[in-house]
Image 1 (cartoon, rainbow, N blue to C red):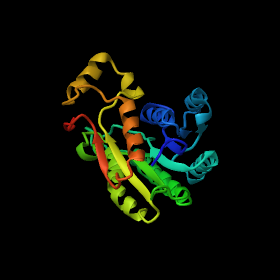
Image 2 (image 1 turned 180 degrees about the vertical axis):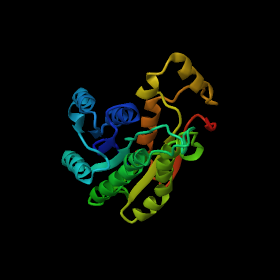
Image 3 (image 1 turned 90 degrees about the vertical axis):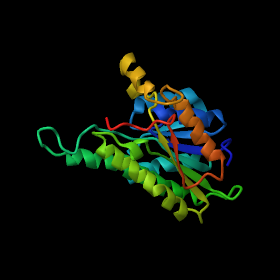
Length: 254
């Protein structure tokens, strides 16, 4: 499927993996709707990219806000891609050392944003894409972001791993559900990437993290994630699969 002339909605699009995806998509001739809660950064990026991008504030777990963002996307042209990069994480053990159990509200919040938010985008974007004219046998693609934590969750990652494992689990059935509508569903499971969160860490900690990655022994670059997302859009035979983008890392327990 061609990116040139098409529209993508990218959640978490104002920074990190989402921003890199927006930049890659636009560089290939596409247009993007930047969905993010950070209005200042979202508007700044949209202004930088000119007519090729607009900002839409939306909580991914809120159906009305997501629908408004999708309406904005379809007003720009043909929505061919929805790329889920929005997500949150909290480090908390199932039981604290003093015996206090994991906060249920935090667990529910992580599931709400990461898993329910992803599915909310998927279902509403699919409904919009189903109205598209078929182009070379397809109408669109939804790309989700999981994590290697879905497979190698570490101590303190029970909520985060559960949310990302849910994304992995829905990928194939969603692709099968949407096959008659000619809409593909794919998931990327990134490893340790050089996002703004890690950028704030001291150099020695960043170096220690990089040393755990077999090859290349460095943090992933957001542009590499964006490039893979764009390749998935363009490669019509990729469907119903989870791709680990992680330099062969397998996370230790802690």
